[in-house]
Amino acid sequence: MSGLRHHRRDFLRQTAALGAGVWAARLPAAEANDAFDVCVYVGNASGVMAACAAAQEGAKVVVVEPSRWLGGMTGGGLMHVDWGREEAVSGSTRPILKQGFEDPQYRATFVKMLADAGIPVIYDHRVSAVEKTGGRIRAITLDRAPFDATGCPPAQPTQVAARVIQAKVFIDCSYEGDLMARAGVTYAFGRESREAYGESLAGAQPPMSVYAIDPYVTPGDPASGLLPLLQDTPVAPVGAADQLTMGYGFRWKFTFKGDRLPIDPPEGYDPRQFELYRRAFRQGVDILAGRVMRGKVDGWEPSGGRVFSGGAGNLARALFAPTNYGSNAGYPDGDYATRARIWKAQQDFVRGMTHFLRTDPAVPEKQRELARSVGLAKGIFDDTRGYPHQLYVREARRMVSDYVVTQKDLEGKGTPADSVGLASYGVDEWPYATVPLGGKVALMGGYYSMLYLGTEHRGIYRIPYRAIRPKADQCANLLVPVCVSASHIAMTSIRMEPVWMILGESAGVAAAMAARAGDPVQAVPYADLQAKLRALHQKLDVPGPKDPTKK
Image 1: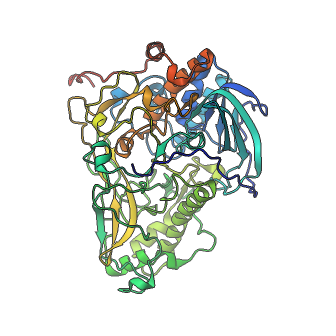
Image 2 (image 1 turned 180 degrees about the vertical axis):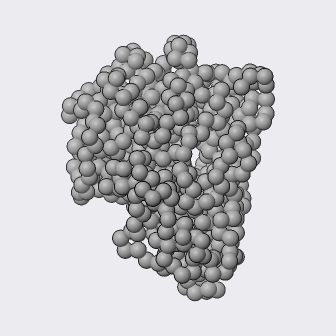
Image 3 (image 1 turned 45 degrees about the vertical axis):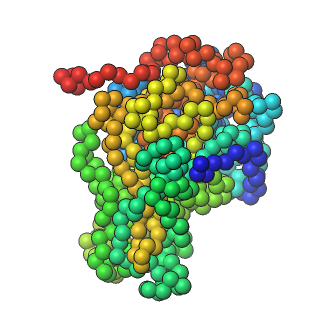
């Protein structure tokens, strides 16, 4: 199985310092070394839902958030929140998303939800170690590591072992599965082979696009090295496993309005970094060509491949996009220093690309004028100078538990009896690497399909409780509603914010039940959990055929 890891080690603690500002709208602070019924790690949208659900069940809850903001990508830059099939979205998630908020409103909503529930939040802290005895997490150690002025995490903390949090049950809602990994739970990352789970769509894919650009520093000479922005990544055979991860990026809020925040070049800007684009412009190569979502999907018409498209930016799965596809390969299992470098490199890439487009004589005048006119919208991320503060981590680690959600579930062939929520989406991948191929440049991966959405079950499928809790012999008091037990192919569909919110709410209820009873999370009676979830209006079963006469 690709990328399978069974870690039972503490990660190295960081020791240097990096300062950052203080968020003004703090919630009640938890006292150092407080003990709680439930600790929710990461206050993204899933984490907020988990915390509120556990508190509603009577649990004493704390949220640990590494940044200064709540909501993760829901409030961190998403142009819109992908629902998949609307009839699959339920529980407390539905009325929140129905508001159709902008990012600041989502963040404010999540702050109010936790404040109203009396749930304290520990901001600016990230997990550095897990104390585990008898198969249970007893406590987690947190380092203080504030994000910087433009919304990126630091490589090193300002204070090592700043807090210790004890809890009866922990919920890891992080996009990366950091608490899960430190707790010694089995996980995977990368792409499984077709044979691993019998998935026809699995494994490496053919090139998405090939561009007639010489990839070498000295054209025609491989010994001269690759141009910047390219990766020396081996290309696996079609259908084979690898450890690549679909591209990340930021959901930029670009604007051409006069009242805008500047996009300044990064420190140490080097125009040679963009020789790949320079050659393309000089040779007339269409680097916007790629696999761009086209046509209407449930009434939504995407903006296409415009590099500075308002609110979306990187909908283009093309060489010319505000992200360097493949540069995040080391992220899923990387340490904090590696992750910090990737965040900052992605931000600096767009800052540098914008300056290149504004100033380089090889850039067509129309594109130069667009670049000179673009800035960052005010009112969205003002406290980070207009830069989004959440990297779009589409997929990182994936837990491996007793039930692994796979392509068969997407096909409607999986019928788990312990459903804790529904998911519905196509298979939605983004490019994995930008590599040399036959003297040209290839963008690998990026498959997209609305497959299964036109079938009788309309692409709606169940996520079982077994997929959000570890195996019993690995950890008895941890739930994982984001990095769920799923194959890569299944995760390309699951990985939507509404699904993670739904699973977060269900995990919060289950965590409170386990904490109250003193039982392992694996022993939570499903019949009781099911009744509580139905009382919260969670949909647990695939709806029947939709009445075409009703909207």
